[in-house]
Length: 116
Image (tube, rainbow, N blue to C red):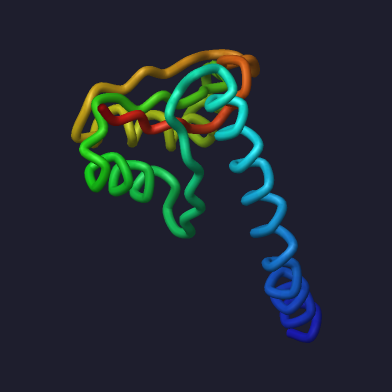
């Protein structure tokens, strides 16, 4: 009981730093895309990753979502590939899933929703 409370409290206490670290990475990756000649901005959302990606793509009238995948197979794929699979099946636009840790220079291994 007390251990659970302390763990939950520690999690909530860490959220501001986690949000700032995430925002910094997003800004840096958007800046790298801009430096490569692409129009890019960053946006941080909280919630179910797949649902938020799909919503962002719909709101932006995106032509394509590019998302990284670690390319796992077997049992680990059931748990670790769920975001990419959910986006693939439910997105309102085309989806490009890139395997491996090097998606593209400056993009990183998560997401870029591109619109025209």
